[in-house]
Image (tube, rainbow, N blue to C red; front, side, top):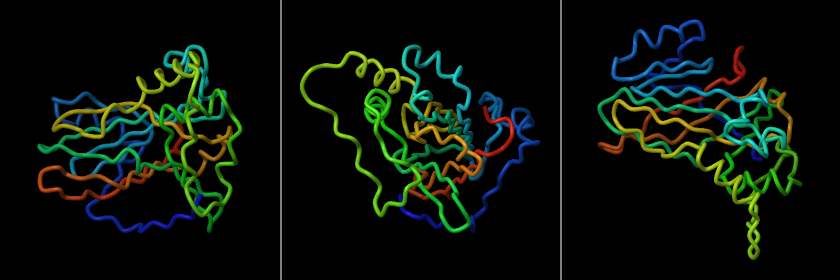
Amino acid sequence: MRKAYYNLMRIAARRIPLVAASLFGTLASAQQPPLHTASLEAHEGLTITAIPWTDAARYKEKFPKKSPYVAGILAVEVAFRNDSDDSVKVNLSRIRLTVHLDSENTQELPSLSPEELGQAVLKPGGKDPTAKRTKVPLPLPIPKGGKDKNLDELQRQAQEASVPTGVIAPHSTVKGLLYFDLQSQFDLLDTAHLYVPDLVLMRGNRALTYFDIDLAQPGNQ
């Protein structure tokens, strides 16, 4: 993984503290249901929440047979809430889980597609996600030929549970899971952030300020 550097100066960005998260439902528009999470950031009419699933029991409903968590993969439940009057487009493929190994080494982990998740769970053998690399590894190739029912089922489950779209209509919320292969190194969550860099207000094609959501807050389970 390549080393990442971020400009910490944000334009008109504000972070909602953990103690204030419970007040959000009262302050938000009546058209939207409240969002409950320990990791939440909001600015420019968009709120993103993130809950890393660090309890194996949380995976049972979505993945009753083969849990990604047992295979070392972390699911992060995200919700994009648009309180503005314009649609917002989020480039889901650009979202990264960043982990800080030390003061000079920040690693970016791309999210897994349902196909990549199935391969990682049923056909493990990946590399250390924190190993230094100059390029992001290419997705694992999907074998051609015979059908693998277990693989197909797991990929279907992952697809159904994932974020369904990157377009958030005005005054609506889109929810789903993102998947990151931590190779069971879940202690990396102590320094983890969900980095969402590519957001555009569709009317006028205006870029929005990035989100950098701290996942290391207490109560994220």
